[in-house]
Length: 289
Ligand SMILES: [Zn+2]
Image (cartoon, rainbow, N blue to C red):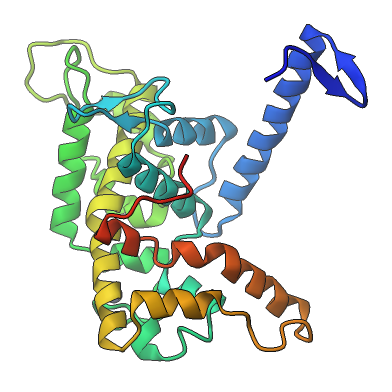
């Protein structure tokens, strides 16, 4: 990082440089808010809420198993990187569901045995359906357990049994529920030596993190395991699948622009496949820094 910055060929002094950077960041975050709100059928999020969601995505688990909430992007580990990538894709509606795989790789996902839900046979397998088809008892227990672990020791934990945040995971897809802000201060607390409760903003972040952990660990990973097994039963093995996804389409140059875009997508996206083959066999995701 140079000590000075060139802008239009001139050295920009310190203060304007900061202004430029802040302007850049504001533009980037405004675009992110638009992208998050462009996904249809989800509750709209304010810029402040989106900032809060992105902050929670940067939290990291330490070796001791607790969650570090500050300045952790430098000590991130591969497990966080997978969950974080999952969180971003979920938010933007880009999870590698079978609905998306079929749209992006129609030559590979070319029959119902490959693109229907591996658990119930439903098609299309959307992000909402992945939640509908999950083991809801396991989701509730993971959510409650994650939330409990995220409570700071010096606060009395809220009892979220009445709020039932695990029930709206499919609709929210990583977002903040519009009712949480008003509901949190009215929640009962669990018996505790502490009398102080966490702030509403902190509690919203704990709910977001518990949502992310429940989604990734007990909804997405088991779903991907089932999907990989379904593909193997249908004769589509991981190696062959990646080769076919990467293969250039026939006569791409003559194809209409949408086909060409899809082919370019395929090149970049092949390594994410279901996003999980790699988790299952433990290989490190090369894209994470
Ligand atoms: Zn299903």
